[in-house]
Structures are given as C-alpha cells and as structure tokens.
Image (cartoon, rainbow, N blue to C red; front, side, top):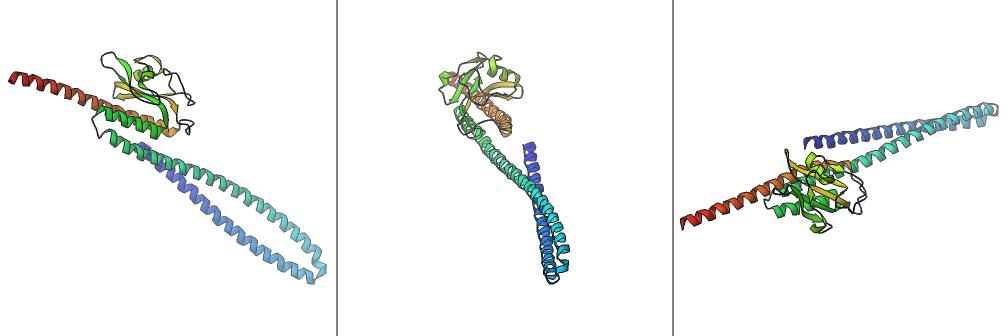
Length: 272
C-alpha cells in the first residue's frame, strides 16, 4: 500500500509545482502590464509635446512605429506564454482529477478490504467480491471461479450479468482462465466485451502465496466505462490478494467447522 501512496504524493508534488509555475507567470504578466502602462504614458506625453512642435512630428512618428512593432512582439510573446500556461493548467486540472479518482478508489478499496476480512462466511465473502468488482472496476458481466479440490477444475461459484449455468467449468491450465490460474499472471484483452464465456476480456488470478484458489473472469464492462485504466490494473493486484485471502480463510473455517461437528457427533455417540 505504501508504494501506491508514494505515487499519489508524487503526483501531489507535481501538482504544487504546476501551481507555482502558474503563480510565477501571473506575477510576470502583471509586471509586463505595468511596464506597458508606463510606456503608454510616455508616448502620450511625447505626442503632446510633438503636437506643439510640428518639426518633430516625423521623428515622433518613426519612434512610435518602432515602439509599436516592439510592443507587438512583446504582446505575441506574452500570448504564447499565456497559451503555454493554459496548457499546463489543463494538464494540472486533468492530473488533479486523476489523483482525486485514485484517492477515492483507494479509500473505497480500503473499506471493501475491511468488509472482506470481517466475515468468515463464504457466501458473504463472494457477495462482497461481486460488489467490489461492480463498483470499483465497473464490470457488468463477470464470474468468480474457485478451484474444486476434488476435480482440480475451476467452477463458477458467483456471477453477475449472467446466471452461473452460463459459465462452464474450466480445467486448470486450459484456456485463458485456466492459464491465468496456473501462471498467476493477470490477463487483459480488448475491453469492448466478449460473449464467449471461455474468452474473458480480463482475468484476475486468485492466489495465496503459491497456492491457486481461482480467478475473477470479466466479460463486459458497464456502458459508461470504455476501457481499463492504469488504476484498474493496480486494483486488480490489490483485489486479487485480498479476495484470495478472504476466500481461503472462509473455506478453511468451513472445513474446520465440518470437522469439529463430525468429531463432536462422534464424541456424542461414544458418551451415550
């Protein structure tokens, strides 16, 4: 998490630098404006003096033409610098919005992570994962696959956008989903959407250390989301770790509960 925080602070420093440059340029423009105002006063005084002395009029005209040309050059230079600052301000505003979006996403992920680890009920964990993928990543159709310990096949245990029956079981190591689970590498393709349940547009493997637990396969994004962003890829990594840990803990707890009930039942039989 510290690495992400560093990225946000780095962009914040860049934001302050851009702001300082804008303030410095504004100060320079005010100085140039004051300089031009003094020159204008001088020109008017010279013009009044020449009006009283017609012999100096031609000399004054040449001097004024020269000053006009000089002022036009200074004006063009100031306008060019103003356009540069406007471009920098636009970049600054864009980056500011990106920083705000990243801060909001990280804050939401923190809340979601807390919710993930607040329960050991597998159905609740899967429900929270669905909400995270919808709200933070903006997926419309996707499924959560979990490795079946008996068959070593990936089975869809939760889905959004389509019923579970539409998502076929996948052998580990087969196809995009099976390969992602085996290698542990996130896969991203064309974000325009896919109707082929064996070819998702993104696949996020769920692993705890070297143990493969399953994957989140995304097939279609919400209408207002056109593509995956760099922030989405950061969320993929963070989500994969937290979701995998939550699923692993809930399954371990369920297994221990079943074993405890079996042992308790056996003890009850012996003590009767």
